[in-house]
Length: 191
Image 1: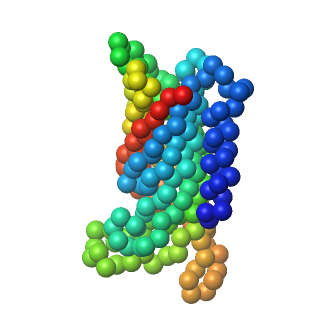
Image 2 (image 1 turned 90 degrees about the vertical axis):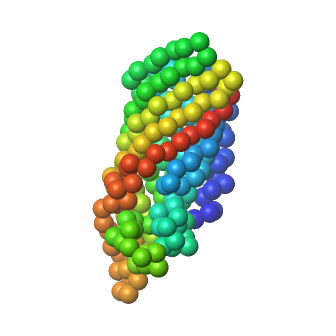
């Protein structure tokens, strides 16, 4: 799982500093959410009406509630469009919405979150492939800092093996729907 981390970070760095992207704003920052933590890279179009958002993050499902000691990892990409823009003296406010996808190694939703804390997750983690729907509010400040607050919904497929039989099980990725209300915050720096 961690063998793919270095090539992914290299790809993000190459995208950010590619000479063909001259004239476009590039942002790099920290992703924080109850879903997980990680890094985000944003590449804007020359007019500022579109943005590509690439996020490499951990998956905290079950970790913060003490139901599992394992954290997952995933990478997501969305292509967002700016629906509304408001420019002030010291800031630029944008409402954006977009779609994309997610791939990762995660735990899926299991009942019992509000039950006794000693109830561990019963299912093994597995591979997740999902569509990503993103909506957010981004504020760019004069000092090259940007703050993006948003929500994302991730309908998809979760592929795992059964503990007892070893059979391959495919199911709907319910955590992508149930965790859609969890906010995500990106604190970014513009290059």
